[in-house]
Image (cartoon, rainbow, N blue to C red):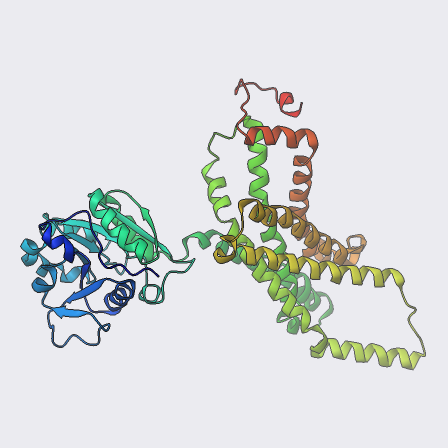
Amino acid sequence: MVYLAHYSISLCPLSAAAALEQELLCIFGTGDLGRSLGQRLLQTGYRVVYGSRRPHSCGLLPQGAQVRSHAAAAEPASLVFICIHREHYDFLETLAPHFKGKVLVDVSNNLKKNLYPEANAEYLQRLIPGAHVVKGFNTLSAWALQNGPSDANRQVYLCGNSAEAKEAVAEVATKLGFTVLDKGSLSSARELEDFPLQLFPEWRLPLRLAFGLTVFFFFYLLIRTVVSAYVEQGKDISFRIMASLANKVFPIVSLIMLSLCYLPGVIAAFLQLYRGTKYKRFPDWLDRWMLCRKQLGLLALGFASLHVLYTLIIPIRYYVRYRLAAATISEIRLNHTIPFDTTMAWRTDSYYAMGILGFGLYLLLGITSLPSVSNALSWREFSFIQSKLGYLTLFICTFHTYLYGWDKFLWVSGYTWYTPPGYMLSLVLPSAVMLLKLLLVLPCVDRSLTRIRQGWERSDPEDDSKNSLLT
């Protein structure tokens, strides 16, 4: 960490002699965020002064920080962090003469969206027109400020009407170890204030999709197994809901979710072939789908992990132990031995081997999607793992499911109430994705797609003939 003896801010309303004191930064607010920000600034080499209504009884503050009244704290500093709630902004208007020409960094957030007619930063700028208000640091938590930036929260978003003011704040953020992203003028402040209020925005579609698939296949398999057994045979096998039924739903949903990770890429490739160019935007639905592929893959990994855990408890289940004991006693009584089936041994061993290998690749994809890992990879390495190994994972998991089904699709008894088994439904989408991907890797198609992605365009976009793409 670099400790600076003097820090210069380009926007300065004071005289040149006062520029020597610009390393002194002021913070209004002694709450968790204000204390964490002050501690971080002190560790970086800045001098910090707090402005408080009660300078002599404001609680525990970072060692080395000064505490003064609001007016006395703001006077020598050219940059002031406003770490107070909007409802307490009114007193700042009385300090307007002390803020003239200074940079005010508004770090406030609201409890919900559209709580006020204008953004907090815009309101602050209206209260103190002589100051240069910059919205920033509001997307960071007190924990992130106190412990330093990490891959997940190292970005600081800024917006403001003064380029020099934003540059001054950006320099402070950079020296604190954060990456700065300029969002433009102060009119973007509402967007920045809405960021912390968003609850998993990129996860909404994948979570809804996963929930819908889980509910559908749960009730589908419930009807085929538990309900049908009770209606047709009078058997109560409802106990199978907790383990057996769940262990069928999880792999089905996992395989479909993994297929949905790679299907949009295949659709985008065919769309580029159809259009003969890469410079036309994809439809909005396809854009949104492609942006949530990471979340779809992580959810697929989660369902696959549940499938592995449920599979591991199979030998210790009471139902399984009872069935094994009953079958063994029955064979002893009949003095009968079941001959060893080599085909079945090959099938089961291959089935388990493909499952283990597929889950291992699943974990590799999940690990490399972590920001701390992906940032250490080159684009070629990341693309190889997520694309090449990703399709290999999909193939192995699909093959794993085919081995599970084996020749069950020929069994008439498997079509309970004329409905196909759940594993057959789960194979439709991944099989289609693998087939479409196989078409794309054909040399004639791959060559045309590579040219398009390198910038080549078909001369006549309205030409209905697509044969030229395959030559």
